[in-house]
Length: 261
Ligand SMILES: [Fe+2]
Image (cartoon, rainbow, N blue to C red):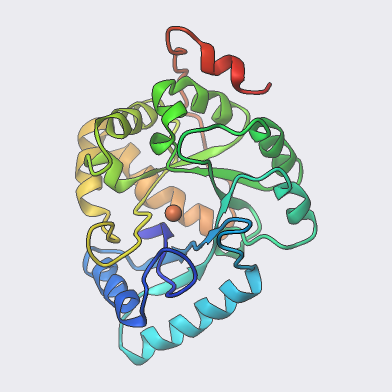
């Protein structure tokens, strides 16, 4: 398996605080059946001002250390960008790091509760530039969890989405679990990834979510969201979205009015 969303580089964000912890995460991922992870440190203006050069250098350095420690896990470069209004301009300036630096898929996170007013425009302008935004853990955004049809809207416009393994298994509570299930069942979730931050608790483990996903959406769809789409993403290849089913808007539709067209 390839885990597309892991905070494994020490000292860049709220992931592992030491090299030992980062190595423990690598051992944990490998033991769970993962052969490669995309390192996706947070990039948030004013909070985690990491840049692509620092991440590329940290990934190269960490891969050397993994080899020295005889851990057979590949770490690929990536980042998790907070959805900010100037992402398209930063992409034009060559400042962003797509998944595996393959130029096509950009991991983007929303704040925990809001859907910023610029969301629709940013997604549209990234797509115009040939970059597909992958919305990280939509099930943990409370607006999307309350009205899952809002994610359907974003996916219909060309975005993809990544559900977190721990949400499927209930680690983030019932609202996130229920939204994750709806997204999977409606073809609105294209990837399951760990979003791991440490060797314990939020660990790089996918196998238990894989079992639960199989129960919810069957074996073939689970293979797509855990294995097939990941291989395509790191190569920058097209990911089929034919299984998308519409999600009916939540009752009052108030949040829908807030989402810019
Ligand atoms: Fe993350």
